[in-house]
Image (cartoon, rainbow, N blue to C red; front, top):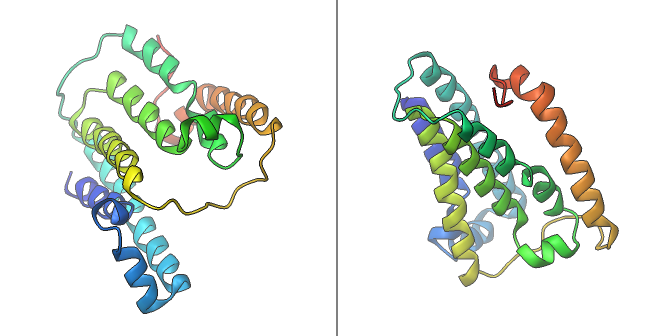
Length: 191
């Protein structure tokens, strides 16, 4: 469990720099340069991500049950997961979805985390998905007081929403039918 917690602190901590300090990122970039900052950000994030994966895998070997969700929660979880991949794609494909939500990736993280919290009651699940949910909420709130930086994305188009929804739902089907069980050893299909 220690490695999972350490990974969450490292990964989400790096992704929370601007939540806790509006100027720290700019100050570090001024001191070391933008390329060096991006390199450091990437290395720390990858290290945190690897620790999360490793720690979560270890925690699953010795599970601690906090609550046992009823089977129908898996159905609700599958429904809540539907917009996740379209929202992830919409974050990089400017259209009406991105304009309406402003930060569709954070909305996707919230849906993903909530869906998994409803379907899983082990301590490691609550730590992992609860941490990501809390981070996404805090990050969205902090955007109200931050200057938004543009992120690289496709050119704005009315077709981007259609592409995001169709491709996102296709990814959802592939993930539910094949990838989730192959990557995580658990079928997300409600029984």
